[in-house]
Image 1: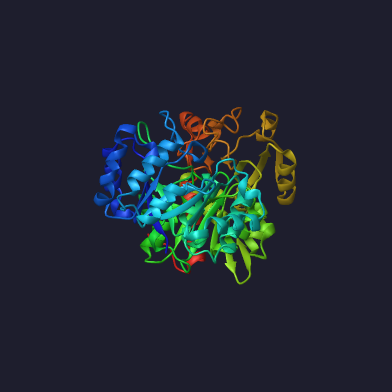
Image 2: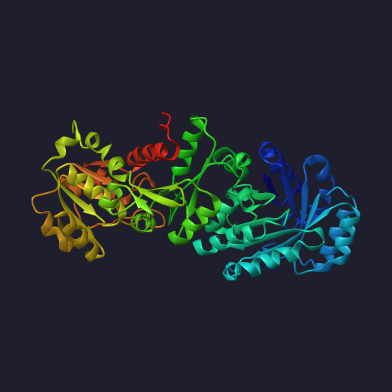
Length: 500
């Protein structure tokens, strides 16, 4: 089982002690980032091992490896001297040294004092993981020579690189103590699933804010999130794993919802967010990790269906999957979006039941996987539709497939809306981060609608919803749909109903 290591990043010694005490209940060990400490404070850390009471890593990071040593004019020779003066106490459990600097004198003092050496390699360019896995594994094995703990921290720029990292972990299973992790958002799963990577620990930072120390490396989470949300200390080789995949994904509330239900139901497991730009590569990575279920969001719902070995009828009919289940040697596709979309709709429109939608008219903005679920749900409810999309061929194909009207997502489509519409459904990502200030249809007057329904739930009120509310129109965001479809997913994932 992997340990949780807090990076101590405060610029003052008192700040370091405060960080340590603030997160003591969540962590197993800590790393003292001496390069981030004010020069006048550095020798104070001689007292830290005795006060900490947990294993400590002594680190003085150079700029090439993401550190600040030299900011005040210090030389590498000064760093060696500081290392040795602190190591003579014999109180440090580990020292982090670069893989490409021998530093024989420092290493000798560390060995004499019983301090174990970490040999680390950092890649901030995002190119290292493009190398063959055999080369990456060879680097790790060489860093482990002489009893050192190899540490590979590489920037992940996409799903293919995350897959390379996962394959590298398999190729180095024979290396006992090691740390393998990916930086940035694409690499974040490697921090949560450190045990799956064979890492002896993962790194965490105090969440940065105005006037606070930044995360020690891109993509680091804070200890409380790792423990309270993802139950990091409970994750081992047999822990059930689930995830939401999409691009973007940082905004997703699904980990909070599903992890809350797992806890509430007394079930083992964790549910994490995974940013994915290549779903085929991501599914292979999930196979390596042994994930049991995936929630699929923008923009992968249609591709997810195409890549699965088996699909249920609703997913095949809609032509998109928002749920993938691992079964045997393959993935099975399901769709809970349509049912989740309909669940809050009648009440939001002031209707008594879905049956009262019969004969009404709806405008659909978008023609992707989410739109397809809404289209089929509303057709089954007896509504007439107009489908608009920026890529007009997608709108045409979906409309012809379902016998509905279609047009471009522009004011050229206004003649299609003559006679008014009862419901406007917004299914695109416009209005979501990083386009929170954008309106998918600024030319459209929602005043005559009974309801404007935007599937986005973060932000809570998009520009489109704010404009509709100002016009006196009822509005509904995607939070109700999110919960409704997630409840169906949870039952598919676990076999039990989600707790209230």
